[in-house]
Image 1 (cartoon, rainbow, N blue to C red):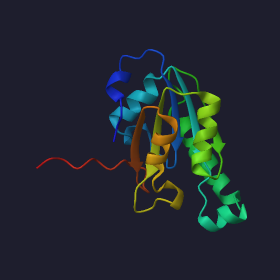
Image 2 (tube, one colour):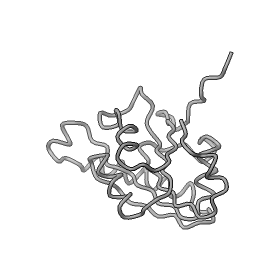
Image 3 (cartoon, rainbow, N blue to C red):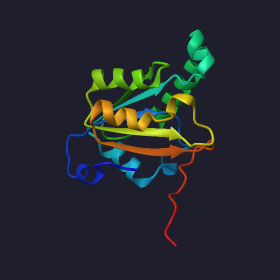
Length: 159
């Protein structure tokens, strides 16, 4: 699902926030619009939230989630390190909406890309996330899913 991506093609100074809840196997595993936005943005920042389960979140047990977030961040930075624009990032908070809020406040993007885990392996904080982000930030957003093998499922075609 995309919002406002047509108007971005003509935007020479695009500040792009990339939220990575899952990581693609490689740039070629991403939908073309996602690759285009990442490669053409003038300034890019990646936030990789700590994705805890409810018990880890309640107990502030974030060690495993931190390691996983660092691995996702490193993978995304590696995938796009040779791009034309600077690419930086950080591990985000274990409260997913707060991780995005922190990045929005610090980076001030024009557009957000959110790489979500597919519904068969998503987490409790990802449910209704897109609606919450839309209501809170009012920034154009492009959302896509990544499966456990690191591929973005093709959208259903018309018969």
